[in-house]
Length: 428
Image 1 (cartoon, helix red, strand yellow):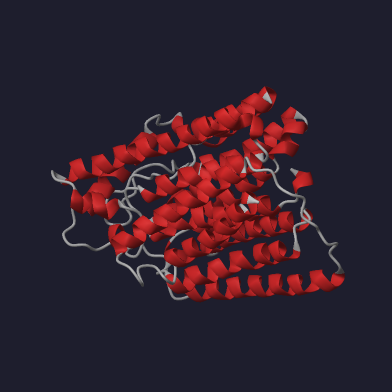
Image 2 (cartoon, one colour):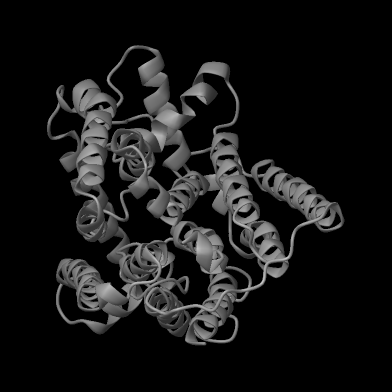
């Protein structure tokens, strides 16, 4: 049936996506072509999931798991964890935390040290030799507070959150009675991807904390996978659960912000109480974690950060030559920079408008397809995940500064979709 074809194509495209971000990036094609192909792969992956969500599936035989089957997987899991720790430790041991290399982790350190000292974290940072307006939402830096308190490397916090999310994905795969092949795939692929990142990219783990963001979005994918269960459960309990994981993403890197209205509308049709309770839980979380402790002191705090981010992007675009993230084979930003006439600010603004328009269009097309075919919908989880992957393709493909590390989130999100793809029919 077509569902099996869509699923097979999704897996093949997922492997291609991982390779074009890591070891095979720009190896067989130019940086522009790599960015276009990578974006196209993500679009196709989203489309495969969207189409498959409306396809009827034949029941697939599921063999009971015996100790003979589970022990080799446990061994592979332990080896995967050990290899991930080895590769992570190997990278961070040779890359110091220094603003000269990257100001991401130093900024997090300053903000947490200020909080520890009872100071306002969002004041302008001058410690790096230049004025930096903090742009990070609370859950981008607050999770690292224990590192500031107990004096250990912040990067281990990001790794731990990613590892927890990965184990949650693997646990879901094993609890959902997936086939043996699917369990092997979900068990091994996250660690393979992790190793390829360390070996195929430059200082991704050493200079950034994007692993944590990837972990948050993997956890969100798992909530979409169990959305039917949450719809049937107590609305206040389900709303609190959804609100918790929504806040993790929303107050760290809110990449899915423009997709959320579609998710809310689809769930609203299914269960209005769940949308209301989730909204209340999310609002309370935002008030407690951001508005009351930080925004009341300076309501413009985040607007200032966004303005600084835009100014920094423009400065990077104005640099001479074809160096930096615009030419690393990720996204189409370099094409806009070189292929549009006018001042560099005009070129950047054109990309920003294009990103906004095309991401809204992607959300709208997904919603329109669902509305016209909602009576034929077979898998609500797969539709929600597929529409978000489809949206991510354009959001990250047209991002103004396509740093390689940003691709960790959409790639690991794709991996977290696998348990939904292989879940037996009777459980959806």
